[in-house]
View 1 (cartoon, helix red, strand yellow):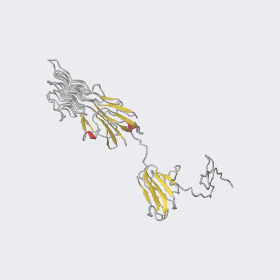
View 2 (cartoon, rainbow, N blue to C red):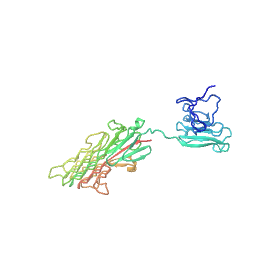
View 3 (cartoon, rainbow, N blue to C red):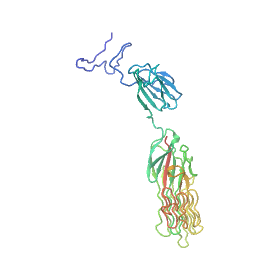
View 4 (cartoon, rainbow, N blue to C red):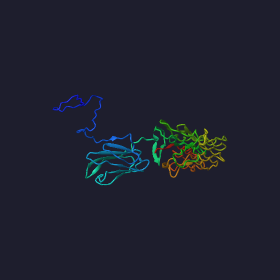
Length: 427
């Protein structure tokens, strides 16, 4: 008969009994019994046998049940005190195709002689057989949904959600930081809106300020109603993010002209990654004597004053155009250009219209207008739709902040600041 080597034994003092040496397996012979070892409340998980059809469980085993192909049943073994069985939703499909857990014969589950239906996504269950009164008791019921996130993860700005999309809104400088890209390459192409600061209006019957440049791309995976200036899918406009930080610059509005006859200040640029929107051109100042003055160039051009043309929009040029020209005056002044239309040449002309987008529903309903031009000097209360000077009730003539609106002429109202919005699928 084989011997069991004992490293150390002291029955009276209760010292530890060690069987075998380090790294040596101790095996009980066939037919041998053991007592005192017991089970510690755990199971041996059967990782090499994923269950996809009806089966009978064995005491002390745990199973991964794959119901993606349809429902089936796990039959519990005949109960004996202390018997234990576990099961987990392998493919997170129990909510679609439930697993039926059936007791043996007339035995019970939780005191009821009936099957249990596992129909919760990611559910994991552990049953221990207690006695004939209660039968199998569920001692652990949880959802095993601690899964890796396959989606794009980012921080920065003010974050809101709309359906399956996250929206990051920057009304000032910041950083859009991507900590994880999506495992689906197409989901790393983000939607964005980049609006620059609007130009200020010119002094003393000067022209209205041009709107800040407007640039937008709508990814097909982030559904919303975009503006007519959506630049997708043109490669220069499309941005595929990587796991890095993207500095965000939000342009301020152009400053009021410091003295009589001076033109309004140009708005500042807004940027996201490789996309830059140009600040709106300042409105022309009133002419000195018979010398005409022209509106400044920019995202949209500033309006001209008597004898001088409006500034050139879409400067520098991009496609789709980021804005339009300022008006060429019929009389003393003209209005600034907007993203949706050129400025008017009329002395009392409204600013060039802006454009609307639903990229961020929180910014307005059903859509928000951006990049309207400033009104002409004789009509400083009529800016272009989209925050142009004249549409700001708190300070008439000033371009509305975070819309890129141009400031109105006459008293050289300041332009409105810009905005950057980024939208992507996150679930």
